[in-house]
Amino acid sequence: MEKNAMRLDLSQRVAGLNHRYRADDPATLVARALADPDTGRVALVSSFGAESVVLLHMVAEVAPATPVLFVDTLMLFEETLAYQRDVAQKLGLTDVRVIRATPADLAASDPLGTLHKTNTDACCALRKTVPLEKALAGFDAWITGRKRYQAETRAHLDPFEVETEARMKINPLAHWGRAEITEYIARHDLPRHPLVARGYPSIGCAPCTSPVAAGEDSRAGRWRGQDKTECGIHFVNGRVVRPGQAGNTEKVA
Image (cartoon, rainbow, N blue to C red):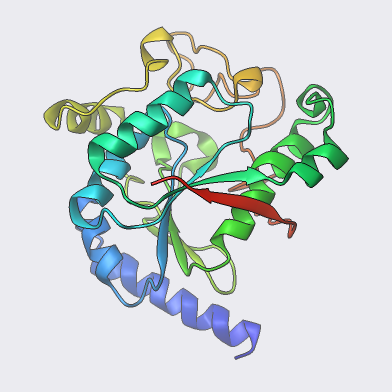
């Protein structure tokens, strides 16, 4: 099938999914999306960050064997790594895969581990975007935790969207705000990331994440002081970027 025809078919499926599930709450949408043949092979990509436990819980409730892809940039907070292990065990997720850049790519592009100081876009591509792209190659769709309220760049998210000619993104929490997230976590007594209580509403790599002051955008602590709002998994300079290099995957649960 030619690329234009593939994209048309995917666009039609995405439009149909948005229409069918437009009134669903996020938990129902997750359950139905995982079972719907129009989504194909689905993975959940999770940072195990400040609000990640909501989607992880929704997936675990209906399909705990769903592949969960966790990108370890080797620059994450130690709290994030511990939280990832604890949450996966508590929720009973059985296919958590830790994704990392290959040692060869790291040695070639960032041997001293200082690339983030001179070129954050290149660092994100090396440590996050490129390894995740390889891990996603076998999937037709992936679930993200993006929400409209998080930033202006996400203000028009739909629950289902076309990503490439052959893959879609699923954003079950697109229409939820912070109040709904907080209420869901409390209602299900879910563990919070320990850095949330220390002023980190959005948590990425340690060198490029800072606490957020009252009244700031929830992602203001990401790449503070730079003209950068996305790591490259979703956008770089307002467009999708998918470099095609190799990474490695380790199954941990």
